[in-house]
Image 1 (cartoon, rainbow, N blue to C red):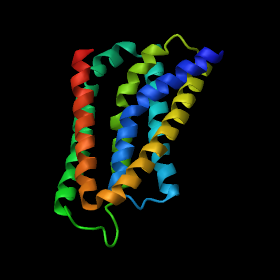
Image 2 (cartoon, rainbow, N blue to C red):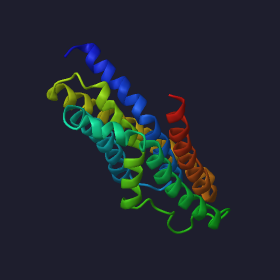
Image 3 (cartoon, rainbow, N blue to C red):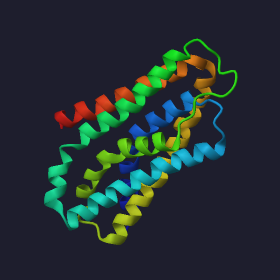
Image 4 (cartoon, helix red, strand yellow):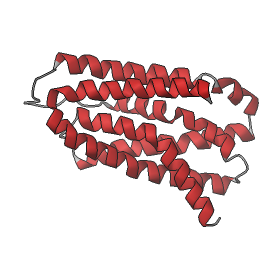
Length: 195
């Protein structure tokens, strides 16, 4: 393992983390009073899934590759449904509270929503298992850990930016955040047909 291995793994992490960054931004917008512990926990969930999915893909390539290729065509549909559902829910809540200040507590992202977001934004990373198929187990694990570290940093940044603007946007933040999630779902779906 040389510098280029780590550099390529980091670049892979940046590429994979973009959807998670956008969702983190939306979550920060939705909860501008989020504390640092929750920010790290949320970023940790995204990092975990971004590391897990390439490893699952790598395992599939080395074991049940024919089943994985059959499943791969459903990935964009799953991402669209999951992000569309969560984004739609945020939009509905945003329109209900439009123009209102969060005088008590802002709407929170629950653990189930966060897990669904983690899966939805990382499910396309399953195909990275093909990209790293020639790595041995140690290299694949290290690559996944680098991807996780990069995702974590990027997501914390996304949440922080979202929190800053979420405070300024107040009641409109849920609408903006929900729109971002729906657009990400559509982007994953549409680009899957362009590739």
